[in-house]
Length: 421
Image 1 (cartoon, rainbow, N blue to C red):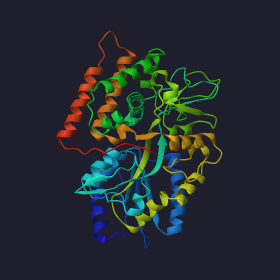
Image 2: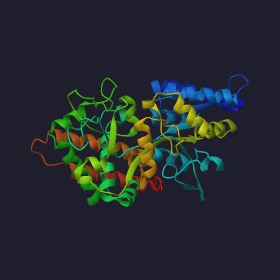
Image 3: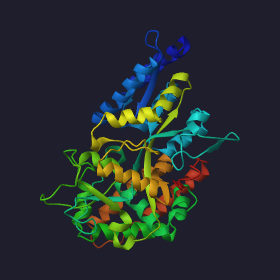
Image 4: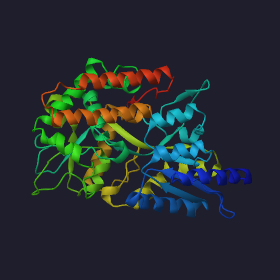
């Protein structure tokens, strides 16, 4: 229940948040407790998630006030600084959550939720001399895959590329570089880099960037121009990859969430199978996830997280959306039915030799922003070099300087990002 003292603080914080165009956490409505949740889903994804929350509310007689936003970092930071965080925040950034945990803003998960929080998504953090788990994945995605239609093989053809994504533009390129490093150099090197132990100027990191440059320009420099001009979902939010006989790009390196934009016939293969120079049999895949963390402890918040990470909540989520929008979970509930794409993703996750969390999701937020900007600048060069020398050396030097600043300021890193499923 929300006490009167907290409600007064919320009222005072509301004016600050209103000035930023944000919302504060809500107090108790009537006699029923209310759980405030901040999350990443808007539009049709928000509508699907709210249907799942409806089932929880009916079951537990607890109201959930969900706020979806595409400006998660800014919104959450403003709420925390105003002493008005949500009860639960859901976001993909392990690096950001790590900072909140070390700042004392997160509540360690109880035992029953720790048991539902597998590696690599939820590594233990040692804070104030104790190791605890501070977040749990409610939804996950498979990366290290290339999507295509059966009539057009994934091993050749033009790449579908789009870097546009608002304040986080450039992340599809960082996904490429991360995956290349994972496939070329293996999980051990990848983990050292993602957790801040490996220099950005290391030869393996440099090789990954240069490999990406060759892949992008192999079909002509027009692909780099398209990457800079396109939104990652395309202007119509229906995806860059078009089914035959439509002309244009024929394959897309993207996470499993992109399937919601396409028809049921779309297929995928591993990046290692689609890109000749990355061919290997290490069985490693990059993954991502939406992690839920408690900023305010309560019986209701624990019940909601238990529901969302359990069979009932996952089955409800699966039933409330069509096949293309069906989410993936760390441990499936046997809910993927007969849809090829969803079953194939589930099988791949289960059969991987190693799963490694998206490296930029694990890095400190300031370093991630620098990474994204470097991706865009490198693409500008690939698009129109104009006789000038490659800026790659300078870009990696800048990123290494940022890594040094993070270490100097004692910014905490996620301790591990790879695990055997």
